[in-house]
Every structure is written in C-alpha cells, then in structure tokens.
Amino acid sequence: MKLHEYQAEEIFSKYGIDIPPGGLAKIPREAKEIAQSIGVPVVLKSQVLVGGRGKAGGVKIVDRLAEIDIVADKMLKTEIKGYKPEGLLVLKKIEIQKEMYLGITIDRTLGIPIIMISSEGGINIEEVNRENPEKIFKLPVDPLQNLYPYQVISLVKKIGLSGEPLIKTVNIIIKLYKIFREYDGLIAEINPLVLTEDKKVFCVDAVLEIDDSALFRHPKLNRKRWDAMSGRDQRLMKKGATFVKLDGNIGLICSGAGLAMATMDMINDYPGLSPANFLETGGGITSDLMVDCMELVLEQPELKAILINLYGGINPIHEGAKGIAKVIKEKKVSIPMVAKALGNHQEETWSTLEEVGVHVIKESETQKAVEFLAKLLGVKAK
Image 1 (cartoon, rainbow, N blue to C red):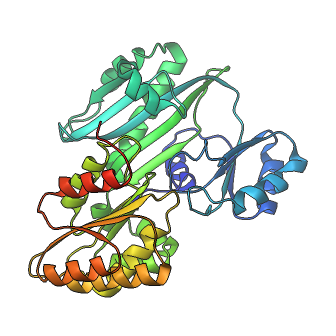
Image 2 (cartoon, rainbow, N blue to C red):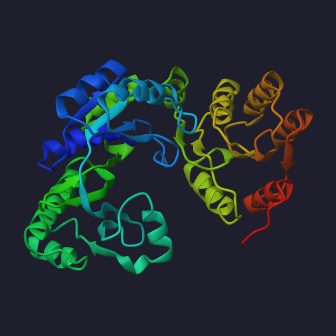
C-alpha cells in the first residue's frame, strides 16, 4: 500500500522529521487559505499515486497570492497519467542550498533493510542510480540488531556533511528507520532531503509504502485505503485480485503473482516497452472478474498493447475468456492483444479469444508470448 505524500508527511512529522509548513487542500479556496496562513511563495503538489508527477505538471511554484486559486483550480482538474488528484498539498517554498536523497527499502538479495543516501537528490535520482551508482552510498541493517548512531554518522560523512547538518541528518535517518520498522515499510523515502542556508534540514517530499500483508496491524490506514478505492478496485480485492498501477505501456493480466513478475521482467528486456500495471487475478478466474480486470487495464493512458498470461489447474479458464471477449466487443478494443492461456478448458479458451481477434500463443513458454507481442509492435530485444 503506497500512501499519498500528505499521509506520509503526517507520519514523518509525528516522528519529529521537519516538514515545511502547509496542508492539504481539496478545493481552490482551501489552497488560498493555506497560502495566506503560511505566506507565499508556495509549492502546490498534486496528490496522485504515480511517479513522474513533477515532469507531468503536477508540481507548481506560485509566487503571488492572487494566482493561487487559479493555478489550484487547473491542477485539481488535471489528471496525471490518468489519475485525478485526491487534493493538493500546499507547502511553504524552502530556499534550498543543497538537495540530497535518502531512502530505505528491502535489499532483495540480502533480504534485510538497506539505507541509501546520496548528495544528489531530486527528480533525477533514477538517472544518478543508472549512470553514477557510485554516488549512492548504502548501509545494510541487521533487523535483529539496533541501528546505532555511529553507523549512520559514518554513512552521512560519505556525502560530505559535517557539523550541525550532519547531526540533523543522522537524527532524521534514525527516525525514518524507526518509521520503516514500525509501519512495516517496503519503501520509506525523502527525495529531496534539503539543506537550507541557515543549516536546517527538511523533508520536502515523502514516500511511504507499506507491506499489504501487514495492514492488519494498521487498521486506520487500511480503512482509508478501502474508502479511497473505486467500486471496481473494491470488487477486485474482495475476489482476491491485486492491481498496482505502473508507468509503462503494456497492460498485463496474469493468474499469479510470480507469473506476473516474471512476465514483467521479460517485457522490460525490450527497449521502449514496460509494464503499465501489475495485475494478478487470484484463484478464481470468472467472467465477471475478467471484465473488471480488462476494464481497469484499458483505463490506463499510453497503452500500446495487452498481454494476458493464464494457467488453469483445477480452476477452468474458459469462463474468464468469455469476460475478456465481452469487453473487447463492447469497448471495440483495437490495440494488439496477446494471450498465453494453458490448462483446464484451454481449447475452448483459445477459440473464444481468437474469435475476437486476440493472438493466442499455445506454447508453454511465456517468453514466446512476449517475443510475439514485441514483434507486433516492431520492437527488438536489447
């Protein structure tokens, strides 16, 4: 479960991490009232659960109070990658001397938390990680041991901080790690973590993602998540399906989490192609479930194609094929669709899908389906 920025900042602030003054606005008038109380200039930030918000126009600096409601009204009406903002986070603009990056996640190889810090923060941190990974310093943390200040001091010194900024940054890291542990985090991130001219250190963008399997320990957050879901998302969850929005262009429907992740990795091997979502159907593949899955995938912008990857053991898959065919007919779907569907009632499934123009791969290897999809789109592997 990924929290909105305003929710993450509320938690970070509760643990003593400094956040610029501000608040959440649901309507333009509220944005102006917040700006009046904290003073201009302010930063307006669309509250959407997708990446690349800044480059998509979801972050604006406003210097004049008279312009706040006009800018806020436009931003609240503007979708970011297909998502309408839940509100606007209005924050006092901080005069920045230095931008840094701070993040905590789970190292997949070691299976333990790892703290990462860099002297180069901001919207280009992914570029830094790709082109200059040596500029990101890491500290693995034994979850059975405490995180000691001396460990963190040694880490922070590597990005050139000293004196008061070093001590403040060390304290923030210790607090962020406590949040990560107590909230069952998958990701806790401050980007950028900023140093001001007067040696203060602020979190000006917060990310917190919580392990879904641990949400029973956080009932208030789980309730908010449920209330914020659309009716279709609630139906999918009740039926055991899981959907996660990503930033790519290939829609994906798979009958298992492991199968979905393997398929996503194969798609990423082709330049210009990447998954638009993660969607695993759970155990029961029914016609109604596949209607909901198809409609949800088709809502995503910049979709080039859809790949369906299903296995049916005890569970027959031909009923799901009927749901897919129904949506294709009703929505007049024209983008390429490739399906690899094997198992219980597979011949009937193939026939149903082929009748509505789906390219059916009848071999057992997922790679064959991905290769065929890429060929349809004129893309060769890296």
